[in-house]
Each structure stands twice: as structure tokens, then as C-alpha cells.
Length: 182
Length: 218
Image (cartoon, rainbow over all chains, first blue to last red):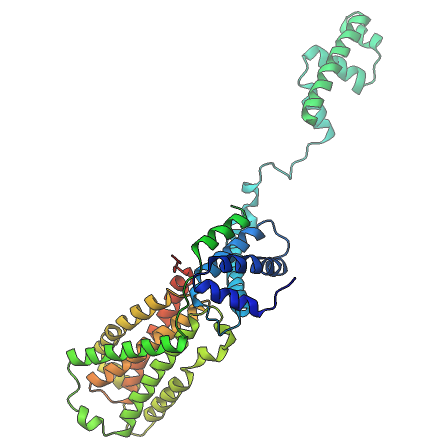
């Protein structure tokens, strides 16, 4: 059941006269109010619980400035508002600290995003992993379109030796492609 | 630490006893500063023509206005020490009326025929007035900042401004009782301007130190 507003004043009055249970009850009563205030002001953030604890600590530190003649909620939300502004000021100061001048943006990037290799460059890189003989066989068979028999004649090799060599080359290329994909 | 654990920790510490009503706090500060003023007047030389000056209506009114400014600023500062001071927003402008009257009166006297000109005033170079005013104001500034830093102000710049204005106006009053300069332009340049500078400096000090809320409950 929701307590009427004046009970917060009564709880605070009791707390200020040394009743710690009343103080604990008051803190438990106001926590959901402050939590919803923070959600409204800051949105659903991961660090809202940290800000809530900051606000509760500020209320605790300022407890001597509350006089029961004044409305409790106005006092409490004034503190919450102050701490929210404080939090936002620090937050934006941190964000501003991380900002980078556009002219120097390339120095802050890990990878050169403006460079994208072409298909030919990728193929050349992959072929460079192979021994010269295998490179030539793959070029002739897969790029220039010769058959295994024609390649065997050109390179003075048996047809089966060309096929075995080409098979080994494909295996190496497949392996290196898998590694890059990971 | 989870919020539940944190609440238990705060509960164990308990709430602090409430401060007296801000009006009562303001009265205490006013009494303290008036005692300080009497102490300073007792140990410094009062102007030789004080008997004649106290018969002049404008001089007495000037002292009353600056004392009223000081009291109003102290009253305002005592409310600004509370986080919910926004409930009575007019309180931060409490000294505005008296200080405006003072500035209008100074402007009126400066425009009178035969009054000292600005160049004559600057040639007079009464730098000792500035030094004395700062010396007279420094103790009230320190006392009021010490008192206010134990509370929980949220409008720190305003609170600092009120401290500066209260202390500066008090310094001005003491200076008028000790220094024999009565030209309106001299009062504006060598007395009132330092009050404004002290107020401005206190705004900056207030912003940097009053937001800490260093008071902790036992």
C-alpha cells in the first residue's frame, strides 16, 4: 500500500531524533521514487543504480538541512535533481574528452578503412603463398584456362604430376582462405 | 555494493540532527559580523570628522543601506545553504533592492554640478581603500564560507555571490567609518567597485568549493 506523503516527513523527523529503523524505512520508501525519477531524467541506463546510490548518499549527507516544517519530497527531489545535473556534467565532460579532431581521425583508427584490396590483389596475395612451380600451374589452369595435358606439355611434366601439384596448391589456398575468414 | 547493502550501511549511520531555522542562522551570522565590525572599529582609527558626519542624513542613510545589504545577503545565503531553496526563488534577490538604491544614489550624486570627475578620481589613486576593503572583508568571507560549506547548497554560484556581497558591504561600511573620503565617484570607483570584484571572486570560489557537501553524519 502506498503511504501518504506526510508519512515521509514523519519518518524523517523520527530519523533525525535517532530512530535508525525509521531512517531505514524512509530510505527504502524513497528509493523507488528516486529510481523512477532517474529513469525519467536519464532513460534506461546501466549505471542508473550507481546514480541512485549517489543521490541516496547526498540525501544522507544533507539530512541535517531538512527541517520537518518543509515538504520532504521537494527537498528530496531538489537533491536528486542536483545530483543528476552533476552526473550529466561529468558524463558530458568525459564524452568531450574522448572527442577527436576530424583532421586527425585517421591516427585514431586501428585499421585503414579507406583501403580495400581488389579481387586481383587478393588472388595475387594468395598465390604468393605457393612455390613458383605450383603458382605457374594454378595460373595456367585456373586463370588462363589451359587443360592439365596442355600444362604438362608446356612445363615438360607428366599429366598426373601436374594434377597432383595442382591439387596440393588448391589445398594450401583453401587452408589460407579458412584462416583469413576466422 | 548492491543498493540493498548500501541502504543498510546508511541506516546504520543514521540521520543527522536538523540545523536551526535559516532565519535563526542568519540572525546569528548578522550578530557575529556586527561584533566583528565593532572589534575592527575598536582597533582601527575612526575618521576624525565622525561626529559631524553622523549628523548628515545621507551619510547615515548610506551606512544603513549598506548594512541592510549585508544583512539581506546574509539572510539570502542562509536560505541558499538549503538544497530546496528553489521553493522561495525570490530570496536570492533579497539584497537587490538596497544595493540598487545605493547605486542610484551614487549615480545621482556623481551627476551633481561641481562633483569630482572620473579622471580626477583616477588621479587620486586611492589604492589603500581597495586594500583596506579586502582586509576588512576577508574574515567575514572565510567565516561565511566555512559555515555554508557545512550545509548543502545547490546554487553554489549564487551562494558565493551572497557571501561576497555580505562581506563586501560590511567592509564598505567599516571603510566609510574609518576613511575620510566622501566624493560619490570615489565611493563608486574605490569602494563600490572592489565590493563588486569581491562578489565576483566569491561566485567563482562558491562554484568550486560549495558543491562538495563535505558534512558527514556520525
